Image 1 (cartoon, helix red, strand yellow):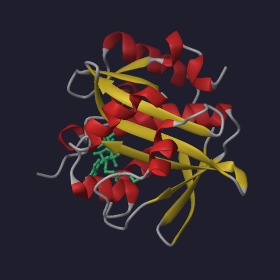
Image 2 (image 1 turned 90 degrees about the horizontal axis):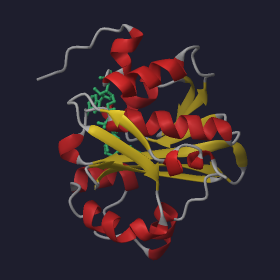
Image 3 (image 1 turned 60 degrees about the vertical axis):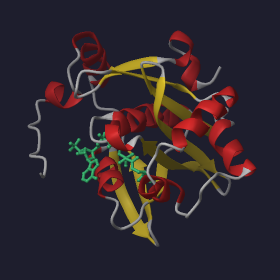
Length: 204
Ligand SMILES: CC(C)(COP(=O)(O)OP(=O)(O)OC[C@H]1O[C@@H](n2cnc3c(N)ncnc32)[C@H](O)[C@@H]1OP(=O)(O)O)[C@@H](O)C(=O)NCCC(=O)NCCS
């Protein structure tokens, strides 16, 4: 049983900042058609930030990379709202550094900055810890404020940055984090309010 299979068939629910219920579950190979349709709706800019290339469609090996996950060395999550794909997240263990995984996320453009990326990150981090991944690297372009913020605000200690690859160490979970998560799901509270932190002013 992989770490994603422990709760209700691996499905969890999170309340987003706008009140929508976000469903997270492991990616399955049969999600490919839905993912194909969804990727076509994602802007070229966001796809470029995720895949670092000018692609119009993914190659067969890229598709296998996205959809064939095993819950041990290849963690992959699908984010859905009302059954529609709104994001994906992966952590792939590095062959030459088994305690390190590469994290990559992608969220629908019109639904960014609502907490989907943070929800994907947090669940991937919990799953990564359970399978012995202690460090994450992310290939992040210099202008990618969103992903940089996700790495800064996560349970991480930055180790370094080289050639666009940011490396972070996973910090142990904070005490009471599990209860805060349960309260958040029950009462629809954003984790930041449960931590008692002020919301930063949003530009624009
Ligand atoms: C990076 C990405 C996954 C973030 O997803 P998201 O759903 O917008 O993330 P969240 O809503 O959880 O936001 C997380 C934090 O980043 C901040 N943030 C998100 N996008 C931002 C942006 N463009 N500029 C500045 N801050 C940003 C949010 O304000 C939030 O900070 P806060 O918690 O202090 O308010 C999303 O922007 C995306 O898919 N980008 C294109 C693909 C990509 O860059 N992938 C990463 C490379 S692997």
